Image 1 (spheres, rainbow, N blue to C red):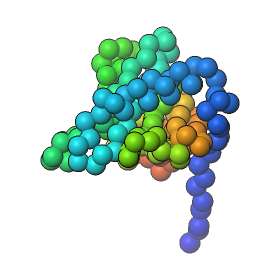
Image 2 (cartoon, one colour; image 1 turned 135 degrees about the vertical axis):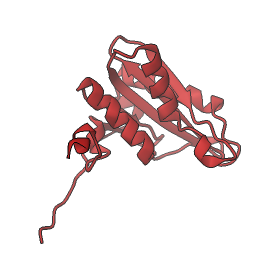
Image 3 (cartoon, rainbow, N blue to C red; image 1 turned 135 degrees about the horizontal axis):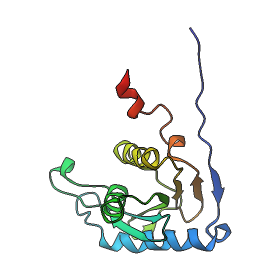
Image 4 (tube, helix red, strand yellow; image 1 turned 180 degrees about the vertical axis):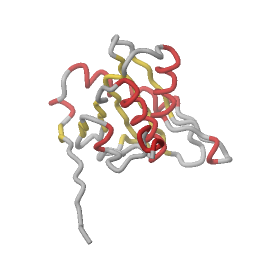
Length: 160
């Protein structure tokens, strides 16, 4: 038997320490929480994606009474960006959460399905995607999606 450890690397910032472009991307994500449809959970999430060409696309979570039919903000924003510019790499994504009248002090992370979609996008363009996870107290910068999904299922997994 051999025991191994997986570590996730990320940098913790205060909002004011972030670059102007990262602050702007987070603000775009924050604008999206008011557009979320979250009548069941009351948990609104906003996401914003910046492409290499400078275009920015944003989305919010969209719930449904048949829960699996809803969609997370991260996938709404990513699919929208990829549909408009299918051949342009994603540079970065910001994710924020809002509930009970406040933005959360600590960041949330994407669900497993969103992590898989983000990983596929990162691998599709062979370029790291910077992930910004916003909290009013701390914001995390993760420099690639594999940090979020280290033991991942990817294209090479299908080849056996």
